Image (cartoon, rainbow, N blue to C red; front, side):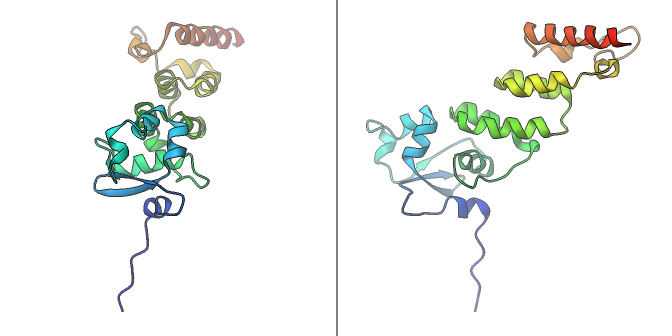
Length: 186
């Protein structure tokens, strides 16, 4: 007898149940979802499932230009047992959260990034780009010694100000303030 292969975490999370009423197709794979839940969490999905949209009458709705696994992880963030992820795909998930206006997913992603070993400057860049206030605040708190600022100064006479190109003036001022506090400690 041949065994039926075990369902992947993505397939089991989005398997058809009595609570699902729509099918999203990504890369030829089906995600059985609940329209009301997705509509509640996303204006994008609310519009997609709206009674006047052409997609409402379709039995399956294709979602293009997304990677299946990341999209499934994103949508699972509003479920009781969300699919886990790491900081490695956090920025891709944030991009999708913004694209689909799925803000409920941003908080768990932010928490993963806060706990991660991602570089301080990279955390600040991501926090600024995706408006993650706590990540920004916690990242700025990581600057406690002069050496934390050394990445800015690439050699004795030349500073790398490209690190700041994606930062707002407010964040640059906050960083400078931290530098002043740290410099006065020594």
